[in-house]
Length: 85
Image 1 (cartoon, one colour):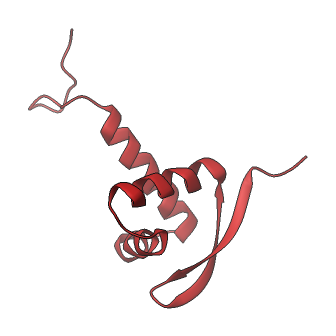
Image 2 (tube, one colour):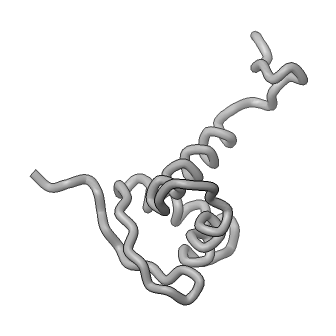
């Protein structure tokens, strides 16, 4: 059975590195970089520069998750709770 994790090489801040991610995360990063009018390498460089800990693959997964989670949530009420219908 083929692994759902795809390993790709990418240049980050002038250095070639490899990143292993599931195809859904690669697709999410491509979508985000396109919406921001930046290259995939530029986006990964931004994620790498802002990560506090952990490896780059984990930082990318968390970034993509947070990006789409934020877009999916309605505007939060002042107390941080979702508005009720």
